[in-house]
Image (cartoon, rainbow, N blue to C red; front, side, top):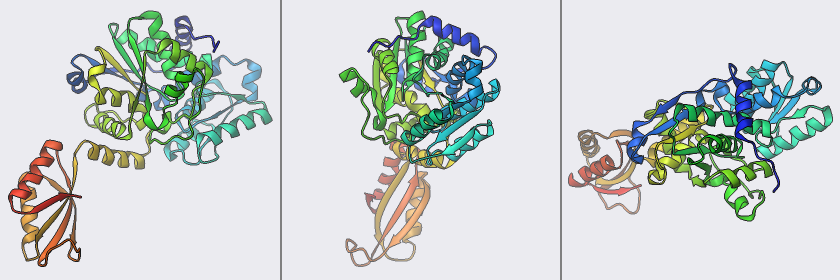
Length: 404
């Protein structure tokens, strides 16, 4: 690969364009993560950026450098949501007409926000691949300038301003952890970090169900995944570009992956402990730190990258995260089929401090002895230790308990 890498100077130039335009997002210390890691851990809150994502930075830099003739032709983009909003807002600020193709599965709040910024949002196909194809076709037919979500030096330089800011906010940072899809953000952040603090480690984090970088790095060229499967739609990218692969190969120290349960736990952590609303893609860096805190040398900065989450998905992920954290307990109990048995079960649960979410009776199961009834309960607990205490209290009360 002979791609020319974005430099620290390129990122500084991009920062000049964004001065007074992009928000300088806060760096928040996380005591809970610091206790796990054994040293300072900070969250770089790009979920609080304009449009709720770092994507605005790169989109604005890219559009601001278009010629007058290119601006007159308008721009077109494809995105599951965050890049769409970034392009839409940047286009509105710069007086450029924008058309954005989004998958039919794109979260409704992201579609509504994109249209709210003034872009013509069109829903096409079942995934981002179809939307990208439609955007490229539109560009060819109309002359509109295609704004790629990560495959352009201006976009990478714009995203890299996140790295400049976190270096100024945490000058002694030892490890920078960045959620990664196509690689635009980690490429830019790595360029900034390498130029100013080369001794710091930069770690890219991908969703396990959409991890295109490991295979691509192994063979030295972009290799498309045969499919992607993750709740983290913002980083569900099937392949890097030659440009981002070159950056990750030369500037990034490690690429790690996180599973769906890791993402769920991290999203719940951000809600409960950090008081931050973050989408699944945006918590990938936090998920990696939570999953293996011992591998990240402090001070650590984890980039929290996106705050655009579908409320319906949020509800599902919170439930999934609570289950992954041992906060939901599903039990089956064989109890005597006589008046007062259910009340006795509920009394034990109340005494143990478990919150009952669901209760079901089953009298006809063949596994039951004559004169028994099966009670199925879904409980909310305070965590794995409390869950074991609750199950133990039921067994001590004489109920046959098994996990459902």
